[in-house]
Amino acid sequence: MKKCLKYLFLLMFLVGVAGCSLRESPAPDPAPNEPPVLETMEVAVYYLKSTNNDMYLVREVHEVDKTKAVAQAALNELIHSTPVTEGAFNVLPSDTRINGIQIEEGLATVDFSSQVLQANVGSSGEGLGIASIVNTLTEFPTIQRVQFIVDGDPEKGMDWWGHVGLYEQPFTKNLSVVYEPVIWVTAPVAQQVIKSPTSIKGTARVFEATVSFHLKDADGKILGRGFTTASEGAPGRGEFEGELVFNPETAGKGQLEIFEVSMKDGSEVNKVIIPVEWK
Image 1 (cartoon, rainbow, N blue to C red):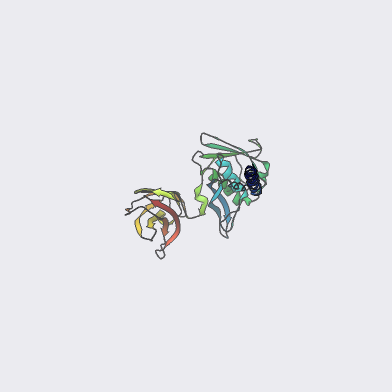
Image 2: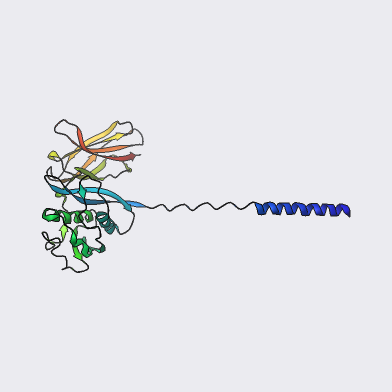
């Protein structure tokens, strides 16, 4: 009997120790929640730039939060962002609001708040200011024409900024007033997987409308080269489309370079570099 009691006390002691051990060892904290990954997209926006001799537009590509309302996102970026190009500036007042954008059969109707009428860029800048809005919106394939209203009233903003009114709207894209960058490429895009032959598209403002290109592998070896002619040469701006044929030995990565050959010394100027890969 004493032996049984001894075992019983020993068992109770061990259970108590185990219980204390469990109580004294707190459960590990749960892993912190991973922050959500925000998706982004690229939009092209057009700013004004003034020099001693001229005033013109510059095109920049900005990264913004991804949204289905892409046209409104692009206009908000045009209003609120800071240009990267030295000397470029916003034309729309920073307190301008977009009340809404309606897109129907290629026509975008933008309803601005009345603050938009407070822009002050002078007579030479007014037409460019309108073009900056129109060019930004016509980057999207669903938009070919643009018209403006103010606070829902088609008549309220007809005089617009004073020197250039809205009486001839809707407006269409005007790339002839875009001087910078000299060349931009719309296809292929960065990190795209390409194959031979691959199509190269964009616009250029180059001498005799000649646009050159080549593909380099990671070691700098040229795998293929070519050239094409834009629809218009400098001082005009024209669209171009060319075809690059290349024969890689294996899958790899490299860069597509699109440029103008300098008539002065034969160097490659105004170069655009696009990272690509091939299978």
